[in-house]
Amino acid sequence: METKRAQAIQHLAGRKSPPIVEVFYEFNHLKTLYRQGWLRAGIPKEHCETVAEHSLGVALLAFFLADSHFPHLDKWKLVRMGLLHDFGEIYAGDIVPGKMPAAEKHARERQSVERVFAKLPRGKDYLEVWEEFEAGRTAEARFLREIDRLEMALQASVFEHEFPVDLSAFFDSADQALTTGELRDMLAALRNLRPGRT
Image (cartoon, rainbow, N blue to C red; front, top):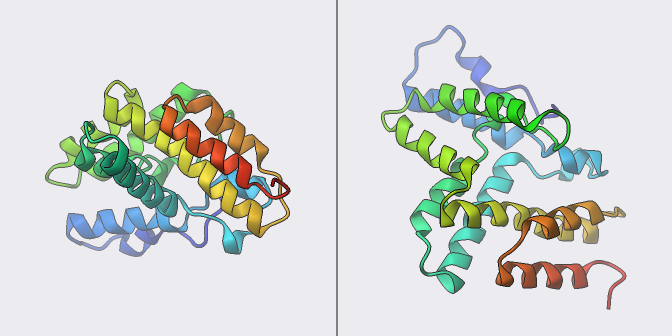
């Protein structure tokens, strides 16, 4: 996996520190872990989105959209889920879709979140939030899974304006995942903003 630098947790090797400090050092890896799909599509490293930047974008989009269009959804749950949904990538890495079987990817990510959340007093609660997102059985989890793809399309839109790249595959991936009318409308608007469209 390509990263900005080595994992910060290595600095704590053999040293005693409070659990929250360890978790922050582990989380810090998401701030340095590039979203590998963007690198493969030709986005330069110095401009590439990190996993933590993506997670923040997902949490904010979910909050703003639930607040304005989906008041029946639990905004606090969406924010927590958005912030935690990529914690599996701390130790598993940002696995590009299709690079390994889905069950293996899930198992690796589950080991990662268990390892990180086990240090925290409410770690079991955080693990449940992560599992809820993965399972996609609640309204909030299904909505956030769509937001996860919508954020990707939004970032693709930004990148296409900044670099000479064709990110059609990312728009197509979002198109396959979005079922909510308002979110599909946003995707259609993004497609119309693509360079070369009028």
